[in-house]
Image 1 (tube, one colour):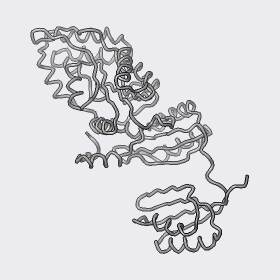
Image 2 (cartoon, rainbow, N blue to C red):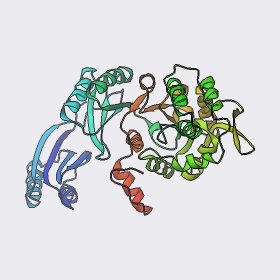
Image 3 (cartoon, helix red, strand yellow):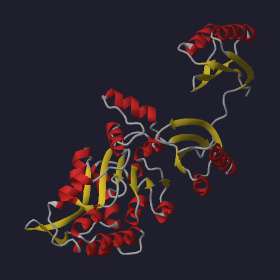
Length: 403
């Protein structure tokens, strides 16, 4: 079968309104078909690539197109060839690089490792310029498992975050996000702050660190720490809630995904007296955590019911998925500690956020920048998309985003 003669037209120069329209108005008089279009603007400089079927009078088309380009003060290159673009190979993936700053050496290393695996970069898109630089590479011909392993090693070496995700319809449409609370959605650990009010801060902090590193059984460690809080006035819970600080970008993450139709849940080894209020304040759909027992206005040092540990978190994710009618492969789990491991493994996408080393190794991907809304870039949502949606709702996005 003979391939159709085609022309690749590449227009470059200073961007201005009407450039694309002017070029296509010129092509409209030649009866050609448009096979592909790519356009990018960098710092006011436009590069427009147009692939068309070749007309009968190539010379005349070239002359008119060059005249149009000259009238726009731009340069045009026309290259003849055969056929459409080669079909994208199987094994397609999105490789997202996050860094602040992003250096040329890091880009060279990441793209070099992509090539080493035999994969090809088909397209590159900037997702954000702040609070981090986020660049997304559209890759084909990839062995996803090998690519993820190779890039995880290179990311550690270059001190950047790299996420590798399969391309497919699962990235679009309604999904469920299930997030840890302490040291993920909010800064610090609530139990440590309660312990300070109870005068047992150092004892509790040491046990907390050991539990988060997976060195202690979480349930027993939690019960031991809560026992140290016996006798604390329950009114202190209100003070601790007022002192809780959201992670930078938390409000932006929640409101953006809620606006896009995502369901949102928080699941915590912390305490419902705090997390239920947090869920209400942020308009989060589901919440589960441990309940501190209170009697006569004082903490008893005990927990009501079963402890939400790593198994309990994974069970909560599955329950929330059923309740929101979302399949597990459309769930996203975000956490930082050892008690999040089962939840991260059960989700379609498990993200370790500023997590302990063992958690980063086990998760599908890791984010180590301090901005929680950087996770949006992994989901294909650009900073420009966020700002445009905020503007429509009268919200001014902070710069850098501390919301």
